[in-house]
Length: 178
Image (cartoon, rainbow, N blue to C red; front, side, top):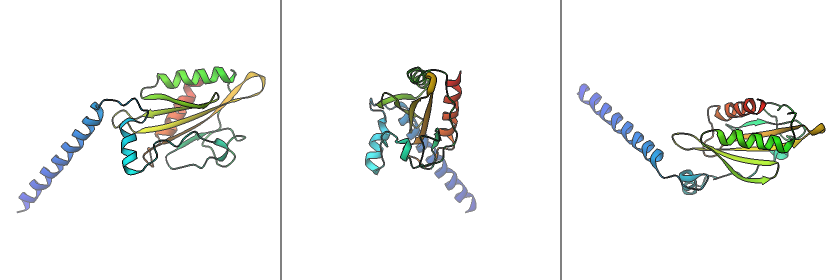
């Protein structure tokens, strides 16, 4: 009796493992939709989750779990940033071009329609499940032709991303500084 219940548990676990593997394979091999949020856009419509939060207003931003924020204190008035960005010794258009080039070189990142010439938006999908994270960037001109930026990264469908947004933000800042 005891041996039979162990076998039944093993069979059930193996079946569940196979189903999850098959679902992951289907998601991985599914044709990619031209829409920025693809399959997750359809899923979010079914469950009523937001597909995109729209452009971020950094001055009135309310933080959410799993997000990461890099922002100068004079822009993010309503919330505390995780870090303050450096001032780059290049112009705002040059910084925007550098950010576009760096982001587009990263696997799984697409640029979304911009909210303005100095407000860039990107979606980054995870490699296996293609879960979307949205990254907003606002380029801020400073004196003497210098510029800085604000970055806000957050997952769209999940509450926590295990620190991936913060790690991505730090990696992008390191890449922009080079």
